[in-house]
Image 1 (cartoon, rainbow, N blue to C red):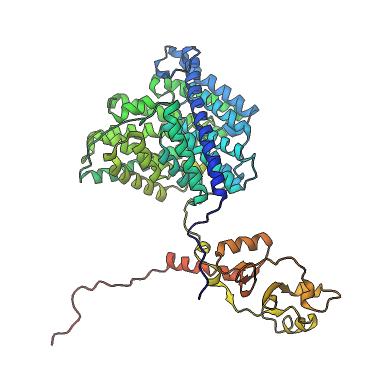
Image 2 (image 1 turned 30 degrees about the vertical axis):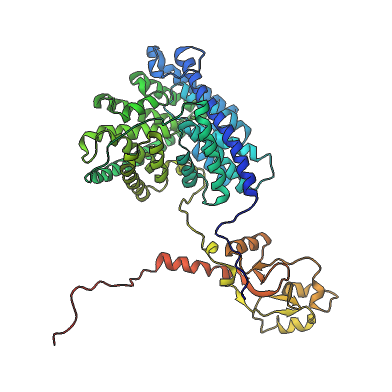
Length: 585
């Protein structure tokens, strides 16, 4: 009877429950942090534009400052520059690239300064009129909360990453009320894996934030909307919408980094750059007051077609220029809300000319497609649009346009607006995920079965001559005693064996490093790297240590052959034949 196969579909460890409980706590903390950030934005908006001490939500477009409004974003930029220079430079930027960099290259460790100064700087930037969203700052701030909590416990780097991402997306859930989209954001942008060890805790944090949000903030959809089902001709319109949104994403990403390059050429310390960006914001806000601030009210009006085409064109142009210059200056603010506004605005402008769907659906379609193309996260964009509006009829057109925009940016852009910033710091991120071929194959599939072995009772001189002489075939051999693995033997160990007569005398009571036949090639490859070994003996089980094979680094490469064949070998199993080759009788 064959031995029972104990391999699992997923790696289930008891620590998963502990990390999930910690993620639930982080979900609560991130939701409270999001509440504080939103109220801080309202506080600074009232302070800067209305000289009032209040945290009541108000639009900066209602200010009566006249030309003095130009000075408000400049003052905010000066304060942010001082915070960045004398606090921490990590507050600069729109949050998500910084979170990705911390995850991939800094072992998911963030400083307490980021947790405190990032939301403060972002609240000042947005409250003084900056055309940004709160989502980028809350993603970085929530991530800092998760990272700081994780640093107080004995956790691995991957566990810290999970809790950092849990805090980040819980904060996004609290701001927008989109727990599923936030979870997909984690999968498509932040986790760089799809495993229960990370997916479950992050989902728990999103669920906790989703439950708490209506209790401390407004519940329900942020932009409720109901449209009619799409007509067949509308699919062509969705394809066109996706292409236009892809072009918009390319334009905005390209222009943003050109503006950033121009700032780097200025003969001024970067501390002063946010003030220069604030000047552009102030001038734009003077001519287009509704372009100031987050602009959720503007997005709602765009989705319901409440803004005329003539006014809309000027508003969108001002918003884009303000956003590009301000973000390029290195100030603190998010990208989601501006992307939503610009995408929805383009859809409102195009709505009268697109057949197959009612005009009300196109601002939503363009909004989601712009987000999906710009961030290279089309699934998140589709679900995000649905959770923002609760409009089921818009799911199909949003999906079609988002996928086209995503495809356009994949084919035309080397990197997204998020990864370009990281690449400029010397790091490259490859965002295609697949099953590692080393994970798909077990050691038993690639090992050498019944390898040549050396008995522990053999004389050292005899072994040196028989196995390591001129006819040597292998660099090292497993040593066994009565079939039980004792260790591995190479020439260096024999040469260093002073005063010992038998091979078994070279080994003490320590258990040798080995592999199990049922382990994945990835697990064994990692073990080899940790112990700096080129080959491992394979045993039947850890108790008896009965030798069944030998696996080397060259054997592990065999697992990649299947992937190579799947990716590069093209063949047709069936051929379509037209007509008949039979000759008439």
